Image (cartoon, rainbow, N blue to C red):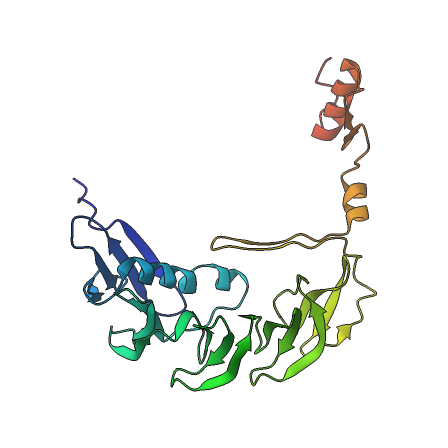
Length: 276
């Protein structure tokens, strides 16, 4: 007989922690426990000290699949926590449950990486901070995200800017809403002009892509489950699938029964077996 499930939710925390977050909301005593990969409890958080629902949401955001799919995952050393109380206060614990950064109302959000975290302050400004609590890039941007290879995309004065690890500007500014993909292998796909795309290097310089297919459209979609980049050589695709205004791949609504049988025999390798 199968054992009765003990937890409402189990979440494998990637990025080298070897921990599983286990949440139960049953009864008046919700629990947030952290297990090893054998199912043994490593430590737990008390609902009297931490807001377990908000803490679990923040953990899900930081340890979800998005960073892995984007190639931005790093080994994380700490876990964000939200203190229980009327005021939202964020802090950090280590992988043994020990508090290493006392919860503070100065911070609204943490985005954790290996040696730094992106911090949203209580004034809605973003910067980067070391785990010693020292600012690396001062919090003066309206938004910020890590874009891989020690490069950040930050919004300021309705412009998007590329920054290096120390906050120095890289290359040109871009208008708000510009698609800027993650840096992978020293280059990123960027909307250089309205619906015209190309690649830039880590210095912000445009890479000559004359030998690449023309890029018609790009959609960067981010979620915990998937990332999709929609760009292709449309002319080559249309030609390859033999797409016309009547159908594709040799099929159309105008075919007679005899023609349908003929197309089927041809494409399936039959020697006239199918009959109309």
